[in-house]
Length: 224
Length: 256
Image (cartoon, rainbow over all chains, first blue to last red; front, side):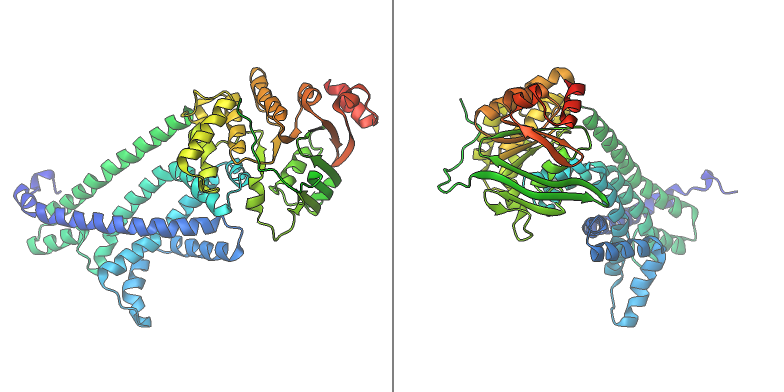
């Protein structure tokens, strides 16, 4: 049995800067991806509630394909597969594209649910004042939907942050990859990997506290 | 006293502000409106009553095309608004609507609710729109509540904000869709009082309501609808006193 007693404090302190660097890269990749994912997801989510069959069809296909395949496979296809059709991407762009496209599909469903959570009367009131469909969405529906889906978006960010560890397979030096490199050179798996987990927790716990807080705030806002 | 309405004088006014000709509306196989013909003069207050499911609300919602008419024509000041080529958003700016469930924008304060459409759609300057919005909110008796969110207001207050919001677009005709039906009884009067003042100021109004006192006092014309047709119309007092159609008689005997 391996116990905490075998945790190598000296090694841990020595690898701290490397882990911090890896965590920074992870946070950077995740933030960029969630940003692009939000843009993709907002458009796809809007298409998912559209009466236009083409928009609806394309967005539904996108969501189904992405949610029905593992993220790891998507990453492998984008990095190792796309060169077969002449698209060569460096690891970082490939990784960000994979995470963005994937989170976009999940965010699309969050956005769709958010839009549908706003009562129909809000749209009717906006239209009755002379706003176009898109103006109504922009000024009335989206702001209310966004408020409702903020906790779900926070959870998606946390999920994506953890999933970004899969990018280590295409040699992006993020937190998990840093851990593996240290293990390969020190032949000690226990301490570096515990350190990696600790750094993930240091990012996810504050985020999930923030999600809980925002949920409570929305609750009080509705009750007022 | 601030007047609710201020329009440039129309040099060649049509006789009727609103004309509905042969209007039909079907939901699937169900015919909700059957051959509705109705003309409304400028400044006229038309009150529509009738049992639930008689098509009153659908008629109102066809007038600003929240429901698409199945057949028939609707003219606003001579323009056929059922024509697919008209910009319905422009038309709707001229037709105010107030809903049973208020439908105030929950993420905006009372003031922002009233200001939003003039600023974003009519491109009116913010300070000017704000001054106008405050005037309207004062007019409906909410001058001290302008920074509150809908959830902080009573139903009657919310409905008065909704009226101010519709008026902020300076519409030529106002549609009221059972606007007091969702209110607690003690809050009905404050909303009706605002509507009465509006009528006195000369606003053209089409009012679907169950408030017979309001119909009698303010209505220039009363319309009784049942099963998708206009059964009887005339002076409110005359119809209340002496309904001619048996269906009108039966309806009035139940609710009066």
